Length: 104
Image 1 (cartoon, rainbow, N blue to C red):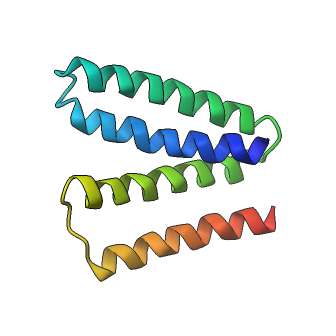
Image 2: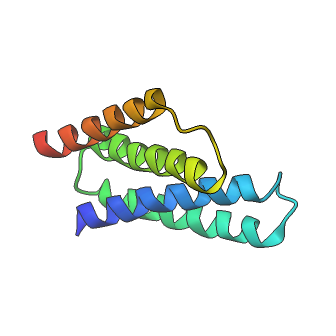
């Protein structure tokens, strides 16, 4: 259950980051509401996971999931550049996250 909470909270990090961008500087109420709900859920999930996981492992996996998810969202939904260099760097983040899970 701990790992599921960590993965979901990492995905919620992507949600709040995307909502933050869509809020246009907190000027659009619906994305602002999604931002705060996603942020609260993400932090609560991380806090739950850190009750049993080492802080460094949990935090890095949470950030990695959120970073990769946010970058992919930007490329797919916001027409941000998709380059081999960006894909390679995201793959390295995924490899690090998987590596931390395996050595835990």
